[in-house]
Length: 189
Image (cartoon, rainbow, N blue to C red; front, side):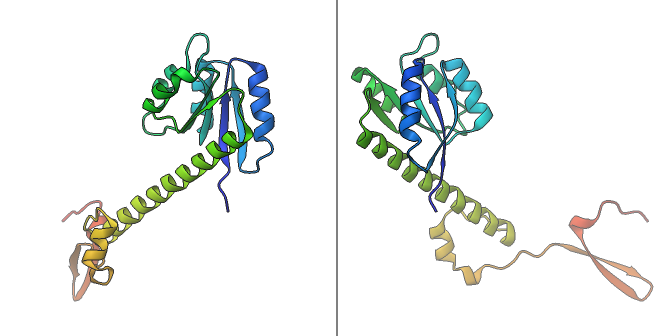
């Protein structure tokens, strides 16, 4: 099943937004969750919708596309495809870690190529997040941190043991009860 890309279109020209929206509506793997006409509005919508992808115009009054990029939260940056009528920003766009750069008027083939690149990038990002959570889970279960899949292979999954939770023996007359230490809130004698 292909991931549906939650997308925001940012362009100060209403006609450009409408044209891109129309072309993207032909794709079933794109959901346009919002449109912004300036950089300030874009940052608010990005925070509210947490999109996978932003189509971002470079030249806008006030905050330009690069200002928007600088305003994105470092821990959760969506894929950015710059859309502009000027090709002299291409190097700066890639230095800003844009995933692609489309020149207006956008050709359908280039638009769909950019979408495929974004989907591939997102799949890799999700696979990496899944691998990190799997390694953390193994570390939590065994009590031994595991930093990579190679390390896990080298140790051998069959050699990993579930960590034993320390227990405390409580003697009451002739009965001994074992209580997990992490379940004890208070001890009183």
